[in-house]
Amino acid sequence: MCGIFGIVSAELTLSQTTRHLNEMGKILRHRGPDDKKTVVHSVCGKTVGLGFVRLSILDLETGMQPITCSLDDTTIICNGQIYNFVELRELTKKEPFISKGDVEVALHLYRLKGDDFLSYLNGMYAGAILDPGRKRLLLFRDRFGIKPLYYIKDKNNFLFSSEIKPLTAAMGNPPEFNSHHLSAYFTYRYVPGSDTLFNGIKRLQPGSYLEYDLPSGEYKVKRYWDYFLDRVNHDMTLDDAAAQFYDLFADAVKIRLRSDVEVGTLISGGIDSSAVSAQAALQQPSIRLFSIGFDEEKYNELANVKNFLTANSAKFKSAKLNTWVCRKRHLEKLPEIIRSLEEPVSLGTLLPTDMVCEMAAKQVKVVLTGEGADEIFAGYRKFMIEGAASQFQSLTEKNQNELLILFPELITYIVNRKNNAGDRYIQNEALFSADEILRLTGRKAPSKLFSDDAVPFLTGNEEPVNQMIAFESRFRLPDYVILRLDRLSMRHSLEARTPLLDYRLAEFAAALPVRLKVNIESVREKYICSYSYRKYNVLDQETAFRRKQPFTIPIADWLSDPKGLPDFLQEILRGEVIRRQGILDPDFVSSLAGKITTQGIGPETLVSVADQVFSIIIFTLWYHEFFS
Image (cartoon, rainbow, N blue to C red):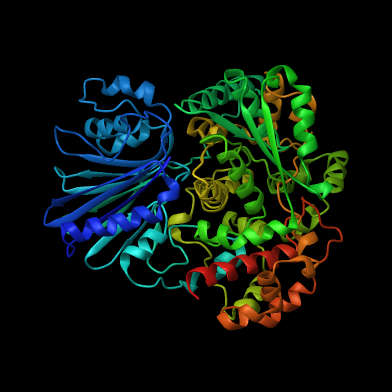
């Protein structure tokens, strides 16, 4: 796990480029505190500089980057890990290797296979290859965007980096606020797609590569991987699917334990992090586990974690559980968290994620996590509601009544359900209504709340649940869930690996019949995961079929009593900071803050006034950090 950065310039000298690279490297030091290196070349009349900061995980002695092939001067830098490098090395064994790790395998694959080399890689990665022979620079990013990559271009310069701050520093001008996507933020709680809230700074999209032509200074972005969800194998049986899932899951965990340093796991009360921990413990019995709890009992999952470890004591007899408690006073960490995130992401797990990563980083450099299964295997409440809505009329009266008891919002959803898949996704995700956004921002929401390059590939033949998964995996997963995991783990120089986002598991999930993801009869989300975990003794019965509880903070409990909040939060809630910034309506914010209630609010509550206010707090802190 590391940080990468680079400059292509028609105006900077070699020494000027080196100076800029060094500054960018200093800003990214938290991503790679162990070492750093830069190289600068002159190609096609342009100065091309590449930089790398290293967190040493694999190939401790010879794995430093950039790596250059002596045969043709192609050079690579890459942030992340290519987990199947051992197997891929067989395809490249005749090449002139100078290292023993994973990244040089990707370089030689590129030399042998061209752009198609990306289809061979299994991992999380964001990288760049300078190819003087083809007079181009190639940027690339993994299929689900687990590792970040940003870029910006002006008349004479093209810059890229693992994070945004090095770009704004190197450009030499204060960043400008991109207000066009403000409505998208207050709809989704983040901004999906290639655009950011910084003018001119873009994300390279997941499953894509960018080809920068050195002579002309022009670039184009292409997708090398799309998530197809219309190729379902309807004949797949439950037991066959469970066997395939387990084999893929076990191997995904196995190859992510490849490391020259100790690997731990992050564990919550959820089934996926528990399953990852249990599978990892088979290979690493003394594994270190890290978990976060709360004083507020209905949000606290530590009891579930401890019960799970007790029920599976044979697997975890040598393991060590480390726990911290996340409390209201820890909201004082929000400004530094926002500084690390760089983009406003209003997610309740920000605080506990940051704390568990801080705790883990004190003992290990690498952890496995359970992220990804909820998105690709339909593990959220909204997937069950969508599946139930699409099948409701064909269900028995008994099934209908059971669903209405468990999901009282189902009838309202059915009545208001949109015809278009994209509109339905917005309907499920919207934090504020269009009228509320107009009042809050003074801006009418645009007709399209997401850019064209963020739209998933849909043929129209997908089932409704799969349509939702397509948007979920293209929008929320990379730009919300994974963004927060990358930034907050790397803020503490910790590498977080996600076995359940192995692309082989994702493609298997895409081919699954929807009934094996969302089982309406048994009212189970993510059904195949629970069934397979239990059948192959990864989890005990109680854990495998435990009802999902969203992992979030008791934000309504905390914000409903302003007296106990840090001063800067009280100022925001009173509207003082917001009035000075002049972006949002301070009176509307104050009125919302006065409506926060804990009545009927719990971890399963998807949208509350407290959630709305929290999104305003996050945006206000972000704007203050980068533009005030």
